[in-house]
Length: 171
Image (tube, rainbow, N blue to C red; front, side, top):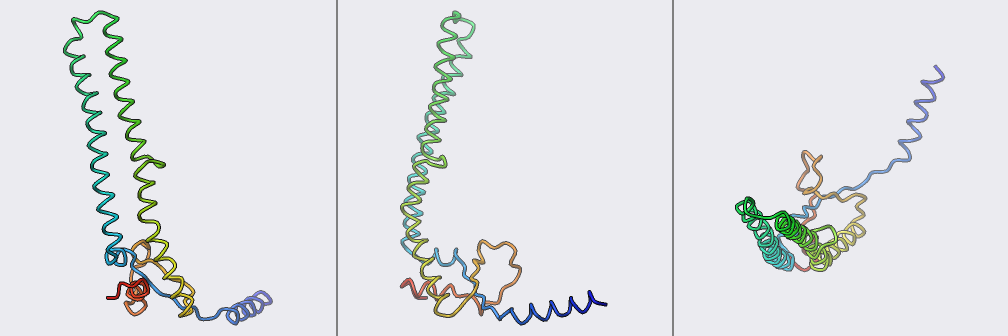
């Protein structure tokens, strides 16, 4: 009986401490699609990415061609020539991997370029969301585009257009 009474008292005490919280949603994909600078940055990143990918594929193709030539000439090669060609093939494959890592690795050129082009836009969006949250006393703002656990959200609490307006891209 004491446990039940203590539990009820604890629940009542917790309910007095909880205040109503205001929630809002944003759709980051929608916001980013409506910012021309982001679209231009994405196009620029895609263009350079395709150029670098073609460069990496060219080196990989060279390695494959060397290997095919090696396979065709294998019967006619001396042991020294075999070793030399194998070393050349391995070197070319390593060069392709190094180029790939240089351009597309976690600290690669594409990552650095994305940081320099997209991060300022994301920071600007964050500051706009933060300002709206402070103005309207929102406790939580959730990104509907990245929150896979949201099954339904009322469009009434979506403030994406307010964020765009705050950034100067009114809809």
